[in-house]
Image (cartoon, rainbow, N blue to C red; front, top):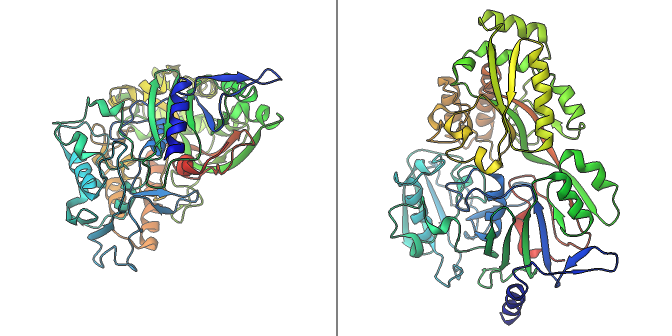
Length: 525
């Protein structure tokens, strides 16, 4: 504990990681051992994942919160606050699939010293379901009828009906997965919408958020009360560098030690640099073009299909993204046990013109495409613009900062957009109900295509009502076939993420799902 306290004093004395020293070759290095500087183009829109919509939140929350389970690099559950993963064999899941029993870890505390018990999980469920809270997604949580507490270290989750994804909401990040929140701190608030906690959280994980310098950085110090013990690093700085060229430049001059995801157009530059290690791996991040089915210009499936066939996706993949990724035809990772077999849309401009004519939209169709403010996005959008112009569709580009595009009141969730080009991510369970079911159209969920199709809603619900994988796989195959017919999105690629970092960084292991920060307490540099 004294060592952790000494490190904390050192962090504070150096201005929360702002101090640097200049090496003999003119590059900057950390001012003290164990200071890791991570570079990212984005920052969270909210620290509380109940209200956040950005990947940056998942990354930050993996540092500061302890979930019930974490995921390892292959997407397997790792017990965190629970001592084991419930199953039929260990009795944690009842034979009727309606009861899940969690055995809580003893001796876990919040950063202020208060005990972290199963009571905090029950409080979190009640908070998520509190109608006064603007919770981004309820799915999974709304299938819980009750959480009984025989004692502070046992949670018995009673389900209204079987839900194979309930374990996923207890996992570390993504979708509607929310970590336990501190009842002793938040329990008396009528709602959490404007709670100070959303920007100044109380940590339960390996790191303490010491400062959020908006637009610049987030600064972290070790949590001496983390149940595994304080992390091996002395500090982490999360540096926000929106421009991908500048981000890589800071990596090459050693002002940044780690870039978890190098932009496609920068991969060659990084791979050829000396003194930098690169690791490429398939990740559960998929790029797609979302179509707002609620817009009058796009509520005809023939128009949506015409857009899919008019755009030369192979050319965009080749010229903008350098064929680095794995082309996608669904939103279920191809390595998943539930991966469906779905064809790609053909590039057929003539067919697109026929579809537009049949829909009575061969002229005077004006659309807007939106993405985050990144050069690669605009290059792809310009090619879409060119391809659509060839079939008589006028496409305008209107991009935004990620913190606004994905905000609860931003264009995407308010439905004030036509087409949206970005990357989404999946958890290890193939459940995608929150993305496509008519029950989860905003503000009730994250179905930002605003698709309302009875068959998709039925299939996506049925797929989580059984734990039988063969049955679930068949349901997802049919659901994905229906999505392919309706075109609420064009799935473009699965990301082969390239992480680049200082070779002195040890125990950093990129993951297939959610976050590479799954074992940050083990990192050393």
